[in-house]
Amino acid sequence: MLSAIPINLDKVKREDLDKEILRAAVIAELDAINLYEQMAAMAKDEDIKTILLDIAGEEKTHVGEFQTMLLRMDEEQVRELEEGRQEVEELTEKK
Image (cartoon, rainbow, N blue to C red; front, side, top):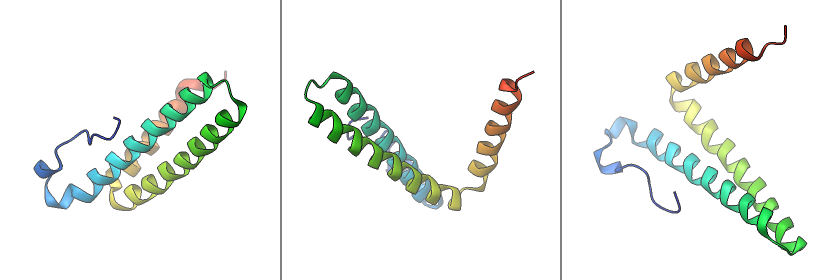
């Protein structure tokens, strides 16, 4: 993503705008996590690795904050996440 909002927010219905802003924020945080973890894997200096991984961890907290807000606003998302969780449990159940 690297600082570009993946959708045109001007075209989003007013009642959906806050949900789309939260989704874009989640995408941005996930992008940052990937970037920091990849850079940490490449860094030769251990202090740089430590800082990058620490910041990546903070970004994961931000994902949780934005997701919590989104789930407060989008009941369909809550249902779909639960369906996804159940499907994974069924497909990966040890027999």
